[in-house]
Length: 246
Image 1 (spheres, helix red, strand yellow):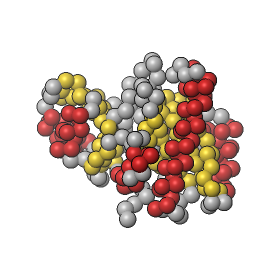
Image 2 (cartoon, helix red, strand yellow):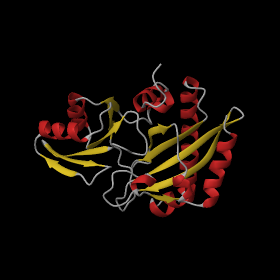
Image 3 (spheres, rainbow, N blue to C red):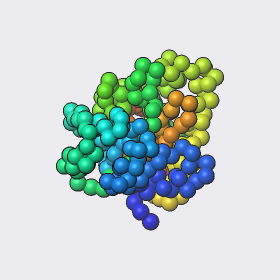
Image 4 (tube, helix red, strand yellow):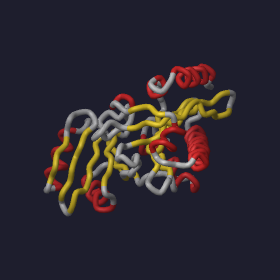
């Protein structure tokens, strides 16, 4: 049946849903062959441990040109350029965590100023019904490859992120927020149908240049730091619903 901790397993569960499939980035297990193929198809990719959290062990590889690559890491100040794919794979093997990894299509979810951004949607199940405990925008620090609080990401109110940072109209922002809620609720319904004992999830969702929403991953033990950094009120609501979760 797979594990609820597995990013690969959860991506496959969501991909089987016809409505959610269009919101799932291409995701494959890490092999040298898969990495080469993904870098031929996409401008950049992310490499993630299949069963870690808080962005630990994360890498980003950009294709800079024919046989030219840039590799960066979340955990260390690593920024290496390569003109040899095999050499890059050797260094990656030595630097990454000793556990299975996945490769995920890179999504250009960023502000007009070039900062990476995404949105955390926190859901809890209360009396059998899934509720949105909170939404919060996350904006990465310059040159960082992750947006989460543990990587120095800034918490931003979602409506402010969409209107002030992204330039959306109020109407467009509200439509986007409703879509975020809708696909998030559908996603946790699919996951919880497989793993009914879990009553809390955190979804990380990006928005590309065309406004399309992409579910990066589902976190089974979502933290509250991102809400605490936003406001006491936002954090209190998450904590209140967490107590009621079942």
